Image (cartoon, rainbow, N blue to C red; front, side, top):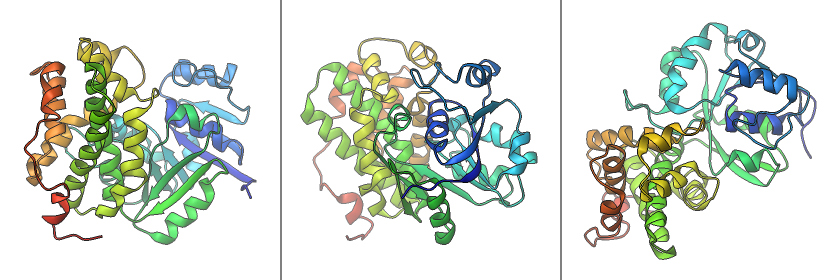
Length: 345
């Protein structure tokens, strides 16, 4: 049975993901307050109940109120942080003074901070001085489908099992299934690297490679994210779940995927700058790839797909140069990333 009657929910970020969640959760919360960076977006939501810049053809229920101020956070013990990964630090720094004592923070960003190489939960904990519990919501969750109440499954991860289950109950919907995990590292690494793999898959699609190549890239991309994740403490089984294989499949095959579409455009000769600036929607993989590569170097983990995508993003190679390389690595044991770490299923 669907939960009803919750009083109020706070969402920070009125991009596609934050907007989609506000529309969905408006069915169970009496009020939804959503912070928008742009005054124009804020006014559009309040005056016309739409946000066409980020979520077209969706009507916002009237119990959603947008604001440019963080004052509303003072009254909320659960805050959803739905801003792009590379902007999370600055946003949290600005909203920190308004947070209610002990408020639970749930972030939905998928990326690695470029400058620090930190996962986004680490960034939030650092900026809030570890005074708030931080959870992560991830998985194959295209905003366009969530806003239309299409069946979706995702994973909510945190280190406190009781708290994770409590927040799960507050956010679960009939069409928005939430599974729980205690592996924050694995969930964040899966959500971050899948965007880079999606760019690679898009490049292969744009070149004209077929389903076989796409299947291979998705699977070897999974091995790549697992290698890095396991090295820094993730459970390898996490990558067989929603934030690993599930998110890879959705992001590497969907017409909604900004990262896959970016790869297709790169393969067709469009400049990186034009692709990353032509839309208000952030192509997270183009920003995450540098941090992922540097993190791999630091940890001594080979990330060949990430390396080739970075070469394209930095203009050092043309997409047509890396497309064959994505499929021509030296033959090796398929599950060597597990064998090397003495891990078994």
